[in-house]
Picture 1: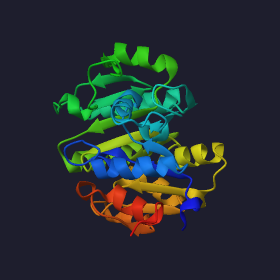
Picture 2 (picture 1 turned 90 degrees about the horizontal axis):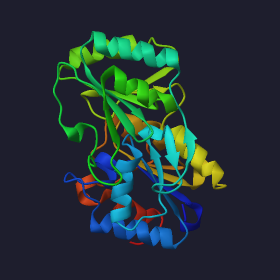
Picture 3 (picture 1 turned 30 degrees about the vertical axis):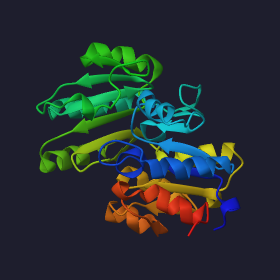
Length: 277
């Protein structure tokens, strides 16, 4: 592919754009800014809350990068901008999922735009489970329990995320959740599950953004490392798996780059977009 064929670069954050210290490296930032200067649009497609993504972008001078947050369920054209997509769970799917998670005594969060309703379960987790940006101007509104969920669901719940300390328990819960109509189940880590509205994911969000920009799949480059990235890797004309990606993501990709701790995003952008040696 030549530089003029890539019009959009979509990236996961954790394990992809961010290194193990939760930072965007100088090399990754340099490559992305050079691509943007050549007219290539940028998008973060993450399971994170939109405010959490925004702080990384604004601190690094990426003010016009799109945010496809909550695995593509809540999408903004730029940090803190207006949403162009807000996909929410049906009441029936939400209620069934909450019932299953509470019966299993799992800790889980219900994500609604930039709000989060947390249910404490058998496993105690820290704030980092829910996001990096827990205080400050872009921090989400933290709510708790049933009363918090009632407030969050007024504008619709975009996704649920649960965590467990036992893989067998998680596998059993996943089996039960996969039987819920209107619910898609994915994962961003071996000890969590992410519950999405049926048909909604990173692939559908990147497709929606690309088409709104007048771009085809062939003109999209997408980076990821875990199962919830697989749909956008498969959709993109140039799907790129990190060296640290799961095997299923690597199988879906057309290119495997270096790891997230080796500036893997920059390595691929340099060679396939900027055409640097």
